[in-house]
Length: 379
Image (tube, rainbow, N blue to C red):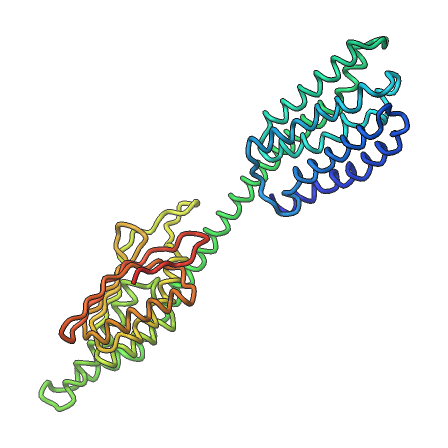
């Protein structure tokens, strides 16, 4: 239940809680068994307080058994009040229960128990019908209709409110989905723009000057091996940007550069088929890739000189990580994955670690953590 919905109901509940008990207490002298009326009033107020718990942030859902127990208070309070009042007082505030118990009925409808609420209204109508049929009042049909007016009004109104709330919730969810798709689209556009600018900078500051040096140099000169390694480094950076754009940010780029400077061979590949958004645009799973970026930078810093491959396959929204190197390097990457879990990175990690004879290999499958749970790595 949203804050606006709670606010809509809270005013009505406050009015009924303040007005209903007051008139009931002021009418006790008209009741032939006052203690029974007080008991009924206490029960109605207690059950009403439980029924409107969602207004204070409680859950909307209510079990059928609890709903039936709440509904029984409606006709039972009628049995405790109406038969012990003079017939002339049935259409006065002395007969308070048909109005005050509607808090329970309306709450049951809003909490998605309309059939139970209807049963409570029918039972209360039966109580009133028996009392009116056995009375000497004139125009008993009119009296019966008048006494049931609160039930008709409140039950119908609460059904309308429930339908309005459902419609509002659907509209809000749709607007939120549209906003999320728009934000993701803007993020993807910004990421493409940053990637394009990065490629232009690489071309202007690295690739073009390097190609000029290669064109002006002879393969036999002492600097040729250095030029070859520089060309390989630039090629890998450009390939990262072309094949794994969503996995790159400043931290990951810096970690890739440091790892390759150490002699680590790193491949980062994104082969996903991105899902279509509500507007038809094909958008990446931005949340999962953001979590992967958070995890990838410390993994690259821990890998030493091992061979590392991170791949997002086309079959689904998960990633695979493989590390081949020394036992120390594989252990270091496993430790980095565990630290990511401790930092609250929203990725579930399942790993297969092998170390033997000083060599080590690590295979990890990375999946989005379920909503509302933390990552649970099996290391």
